[in-house]
Amino acid sequence: MTRDHDRSRRLLNFYPKAYRDERGDEIVATLQEAAEARVPRASLSDQISVAQYGVRIRLGLTSETMFGKALDIAAIPGLVIGAFFGLYLLISGDLPVVNSRFFYPHFGPFLTVGPLFYLVWILGVVVVFEWPQYRRRIAGVCMTLTIIGEVLAKIAHRNPNAWEIAILVSLGLPSLLAPDVLVTRRRVLPSLSLGLVTFAALFFVTNTRVNPGFFNSFYWSGTYEIVRRLPYVDALLLVLFVVLWATKRREIASAALILSSPWIIVGVAYPLSLRNLPVDAFNVIALIAWAAGMVLIVSTSRYRPRPPAPIGLSAVNSGL
Amino acid sequence: MIKEMREPTFLVLTTLAEGKKHGYAIIQGVAGLSDGEVTLKAGTLYAMLDRLTFDGVIGLAGEEVVDGRLRRYYELTPEGTTLLGDESKRRVKVSNIALRRLRFIGGVA
Image 1 (tube, rainbow over the protein chains, first blue to last red):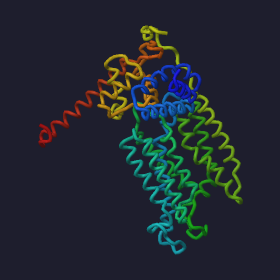
Image 2 (image 1 turned 135 degrees about the horizontal axis):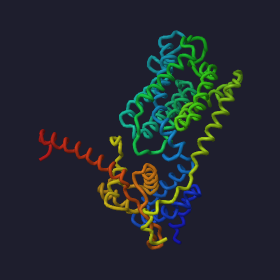
Image 3 (image 1 turned 30 degrees about the vertical axis):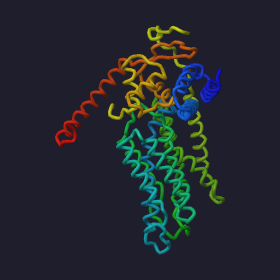
Image 4 (image 1 turned 135 degrees about the vertical axis):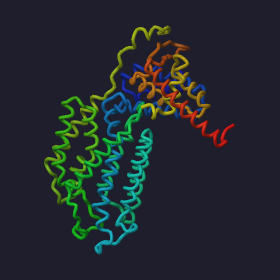
């Protein structure tokens, strides 16, 4: 047993036992052969990639599992919903205070750098429709620019509301976590439809008429209104999940639950962060139901040993 | 559907078109076909093999132990053969159009 062999074996600890038993020897053999043929640096990147794939299998983030399939379905719609959410924030939060006598603009005619973030997401959606196979990188760029921008802007008090930015960034997570698939579908029509429905729902549940002086703060926050009306939306989402699950459209149901995650979490986290805002009981129920749904999805996505290969294909077995 | 097939997937399937191959032989095959431009990492390879197996594009073709190491062999399924054939024809068609146009403007001899 060499040191390299021991190190390769230790990497298998990232994998679930069932996968380790099934493929462990094969992976170690490939790592060994690769290490013998390459410079040490290349063999290190091999080891990192093996560890990463192990973590993916352990979390059920592969294209064969329900979690992986649901993330694949939710990936591009998530980015599109993010772009429409940005558009909503621009129309509801930023445009009404342009030229307002109550506010002093900090970023062009706008109060915050928010419109810049929203533009990044809209451009991201245009790019992802053209090159859907790069959705992970596109989401990574959108999320990173938004987070860095928010942190930098906060120093100069030019940042948009952090809760809204948290929702926006979370909508990129399905693309970031989704597994690679053989064919990445654009899903243009379903994604745009979902984006438009979210856009319309946001206007429907919040007061679109913003009084720039009302909150007497440096930025209008739609979070308060979104969270206040969220129970109705939560109820609809949970009914939708149950109906889809019961009618065996489980991957779509799971994708719907994943896309509703940021809203449901913020529905409880936002009031908790404020002393004077009570937490709506239904939002708590929705959070518990959401958590139960996620546990269900993750637990059904655990790695399970595959059935053995057909006898005809295994006929070449010569050594074992 | 084939429009979005990624280069590494195409190279893996092309490597397997030569016959059944084990993990490291596939890595070598991909590097050879791409003149060293595409180097598959071991983790990426197994993610791809799992995905292609799940999609029915490739299948297990047996295993053996060589120098105390397990080699598991993979081969194209009939579906994989069709998929690779269709994708290759599409690429040839586009390449031929590109070459014709380049000749027209004097871009290639």
